[in-house]
Length: 233
Image (tube, rainbow, N blue to C red; front, top):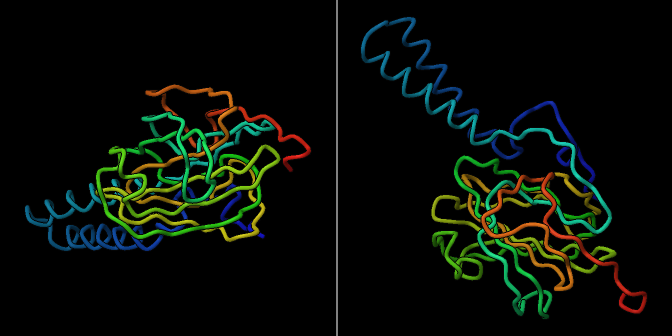
């Protein structure tokens, strides 16, 4: 069961999985700082300024603020920070094999890159699919780009959340495994340097956002689901 320290709030304010990148740029910054102290020159000053900027940029990119999730029965919350760029009814042919609502979010370079569980449930599958690295906002990116899809069985029906790689974000990470019991708002993955998240959920849901709205992971209500009939459980 995935109720590890990764999912819970933590003292380390940076994304799990970004440690190696943070360590690399910290060493570059420290080396440039030592060089400037040992040899205060224009060249060492330029290097210090450059590596200071890169170090601060990486710290910002991999920030992971603690948040108190909004956890109401049947309410889907934002799986990450970003902007709603698409809402449509469609036939989902790969996993759910029925008509659903697909809500698409675009994550920019400046958004928090950590993904959070949109609704408490049991992980039914985690599926990695290699693919292209098209611009994430293009409609075809949802199926043609590299992605990781995760299914969650909930008392309100099965939902799917898909992390989609983009032209810059060429690595998606998902730490869940089949059978894990995940809680609303807990961290479960990471998309490096932004990209796209697609959510698939039942068509009778009440939408709580519109195209163009800003969404914050673990905080913003996305949709309200109806409980399943006893016969459907």
